[in-house]
Image 1 (cartoon, helix red, strand yellow):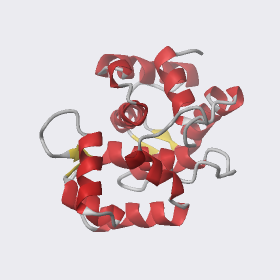
Image 2 (image 1 turned 90 degrees about the vertical axis):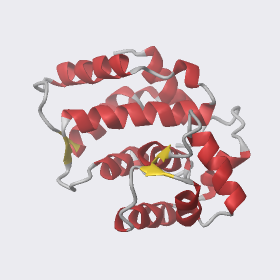
Image 3 (image 1 turned 135 degrees about the horizontal axis):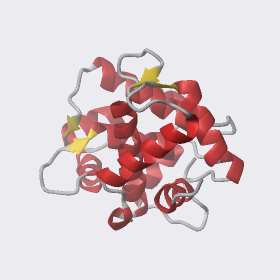
Image 4 (image 1 turned 30 degrees about the vertical axis):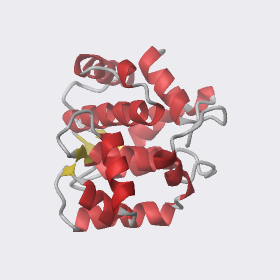
Amino acid sequence: MGVSQSYVLPKHFAGFTHWPYPRVTSTIKAYETGEYDFGIDHTVIMTLTNGSLDEAKILLKAFTRNESGVANACVFFSALIMLAEPNRRQELYQVGTIFDFFDFDKTGQLSMDEFTIMISCLCLAAALILDRTDEVMDDNAVMQLVKAIYNKTGKVNGAPINRTEVLGICKEYFDSHEIKTVDEYFGRLTLGGD
């Protein structure tokens, strides 16, 4: 996925664009098997990324919107997945990996609440990457988007959504419009469109 060539990433995010997929998946596996909390601090970031203490502190600051010293792991991994290996040719690769990350019980589906959290984390991750947090969708807007997706796909509110359905939605609303980068995805999410 990555970002458009015209967009210059800050150094702390640019490093992730050199991560190959196996490194991403091993980092996710380390997070999952390490039984870390959803709130991660600089020591966890340092451990997971094999970065220096200073790099971990910079990343923590980039992923927090307050002075709590804790970043949301779901937002962190969403950003990592979106930025890693940006020229990968496999269609919808990052979206599938993100879905799999949010599929905590590994059933191949997300509850409507989990899907809403996934969309919210993706929006915030993209906003942080692009330094456009003033444009991030609020909770109500995310809920309305999820309800619109459910309505458009004929799903009953509250029903789970599976991986194939999510990939189909992304293929139709993003890939079919040649939307391939974080900044393009973010623009499509915040501006809407059918």
